[in-house]
Structure formats: structure tokens, C-alpha cells
Image (cartoon, rainbow, N blue to C red; front, side, top):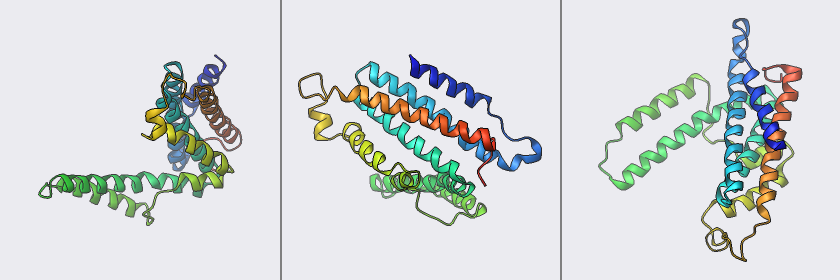
Length: 218
């Protein structure tokens, strides 16, 4: 399959990337972002293939949307060093959101629950945010980022389609089946679009690497 060959090239390219040498280790954080974007893209391509071959519209749509979002993230990160650093900050902002939500969930289930471990984790994560000078509390909106990279209309349309299949909706519950109501012609479209997003990510990172190496654009 032609798409398999393209993603095999992406994997080989990702494996060929190396962190900056010791004299320029200050850019290793950028290498980590790029490496993880590629690795997650490869994982979601595997999910895309499984969803397509097994007629699992939910998994297919999930993987397609993930590949779209990964491409948006990659394009945003490659625009500038400031963008890349802002994206990296979200790992801690997201982490704090997760901990707070877990704590609220535990207290909802049992108002007397001991949240000491979660409180400690939150304190340590907030300390890490302070050490990195992160003051923002809200993560980046993928829809907004899509606008920054010229993909807003496409993101909104594809996200709407995929959301109808990913989440329990009247459509996904009642119409996604092998009967006459199933929108079976969407499957090859979702596969093609998802694979295309992954290839777009590959080209964007490869083009950046050809000019800047594994360093952010300054």
C-alpha cells in the first residue's frame, strides 16, 4: 500500500533524528516535541488502518481526527520558537487540569476521601510551572491553532464529522451499522483524509528539518 510506504518513511525519518550535541543541548526540548509528534502520528496511523479494515467507524473517525489535530499542532510548533514553547507549556497546564478533575471526581464519589496524593502531585506540578515561568492556566484550543496554520475551515468541518462518529450521538448509535442507514462511503474518505494529514505532517517536519535541523525557527 502506498500509504504504508509513506508512513514507513516517516518512521525511518523520525528514527534518524538525533538531539543536538552537548554544545547545543538547549534545543533538545524541541527535538522531544518533534519526536513525540511523529511517534503519536505513527500510532494513530495504525489505528486508522485497523478502523478501516475492520469497518470500525468509531476507531476510524477517532484516528482521522487525531491525525488532523497532530498536523495542526506540528504546523503551529514549526512556525516559531515561541509557538513551540507555548505548546510545550500545555503539558503542565493539562496535567493540572487532570489532577483537579480527578480530585473533584473523588470528592464527588466520597466527600471524605483522602486527596493527599493528588494534592501533592498538584503542588509539584505547579512548582514545575513556576520554575518554567508558566503563568497561563488555559490550554491552547485546537480550533484556534487551526486558524493560525490556515486550516480553520477544514478543521471545523472534519472535527464536526468525526465527532458525530466518535461520541455517542443519535447517528453513531442508530445509523452506524451494516444496514441501509450506514454512511459507508465515509470510510474511504476518512481513511484517505487521515493518511493525508499524516503525510502533511511528515512533509512539514521534513521541510523544516532541511532548513533548520532539529531546532526551532527563530
